[in-house]
Amino acid sequence: MLLHLLLIVLVILVTRKLIPWYLTFRAFRQKVDLIPGPNGWPILGNVPELIQKLKKGEMTRLLFKEYPEKYGPIFRFWTAFVPRIGLCSARHAEPLLSSTKLIKKSIDYDLTRDWLGDGLLLSSGLKWKTRRRLLTPAFHFTILENFIPIFVKCTERFVKVLEGKMVGQKFFDIYPLTSLASLDAICECAMGVEVEAQCSEESEYVKAVKRASVIANARSVQPWYYSDFVFYLSATGREQKKLLRMLHDFTRKIIEQRREEFRNKEVDDETTSRKPVFLDLLLSKDLELSDSDIQEEVDTFMFEGHDTTGAGIAWCLYELGRHPEIQEKAFEEIQSVLAKYDGKIDSRSLSEMKYLEACIKETQRIRPSVPVVVREATEDFQSGEYVVPKGAQVSVLIMSIHMDPEFYPDPEKYNPERFFSGEQVKRHPYSFIPFSAGPRNCIGQRFAMLETKTTIALFLNKFIVRSKEPISAIKPQAELILKPDIGLFIEVIQRD
Ligand code: HEM
Image (cartoon, rainbow, N blue to C red; front, side):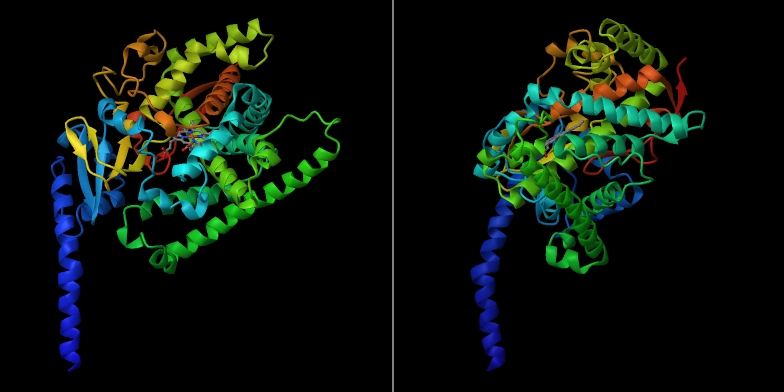
């Protein structure tokens, strides 16, 4: 009797649920598979190959080079039942990036939601639109100008650290140091707090950010960890929980401190002339943001605003260290501009360092700090000759787009002239997108450029840099940020 009942339930389940689901999925799959891509395993799709490559440190090469070379500027692969589309040409990426409707971030970003909450990076729909509108004035040029003295102060600290510890010492990894320097800068600009991360041996916060990024990244190719329930039962999941608690405590404490200072400031508003930081703007009554709203935006700024810039500065110093003649040209420009402005770094002097800007942009082209952005197709859309169906997870492979020989002949070659001689105006507007493009581009891009320029200008004014290996010897690893596999080893020599 019981067996009969079970059998009936099973038949109903199969006919009512499983078969319709399978038929819908099969039709969807057929649509996705019109796009070229590798064959996969039943159910698992391409997960076995991805995991194998991840273990060997070759996943970045597979996705950014091998697949595009084999399948073309638009390709697909499957992580279990999840279809993934890669877009690696400006022409194919434009319809997605320029759309005001296709703004939903992919499921991969959910894996950082416990960390960044529903802040500007992860939110979508009305919440994102409202927040973006509220936060945009905070990145106005007149506000950003106030941060230049902070960038100068943090770079002076950076130079001191180099002078104290590194000068004369043979090759050392510059990436952890630029990461700490950027952490100092974003902490002060976002929250008005001087953490002096560069002066402490190794900041717990930075260690936690790094480890949490590695875990989130590995999780994105392990579908059995997509469920929070399963993930947080695992040892790695428990470790992640601990790291996130640490990260949140760090920012929460800073918000509390600033709120207190902000209250006092309100009392004697007339007498204080302190320049506002981002947190002041978030705390302003006009925005009506709750504590948790502020916490998620602060966590997002701290995350988006430090390792991205830190990695960009490190890759740029490394490239300059490989190209002494380019470094010398940048140095000469810095010297002549600083001489004109009595040695002062401000918005005017920075804006005249055009060749330095070209060096930074050429680095961002070859080694973009954010190598990929991923959206969920919330409706079908046309990309080149293919239709990307609703429901697919779509990656814009920024690093591959930047290597297109149509716009960048000899793409592996580091050549700042590409951004100096007016050549850029002739290129496709989506052929250079280190800060993404369209309505969901980086809100902090001008901030990042000012910080990067200040740091490198003051660095080159003091030091000559030489890099150890050719850049081709360093495998870039596309985690949430583009990282070098073996570090970026340079030596610095004090200028006379
Ligand atoms: C060199 C440094 C930086 C690079 C390369 C960079 C790159 C990017 C990219 C590619 C995106 C799009 C992400 C996506 O669609 O998934 C983005 C978004 C964002 N970035 Fe940056 N970023 C940098 C620095 C900064 C800084 C300094 C801040 C803050 C002070 C910042 C804040 C943000 C925020 C809040 C978003 C989300 C914007 C939105 O969706 O409306 N970034 N960034």
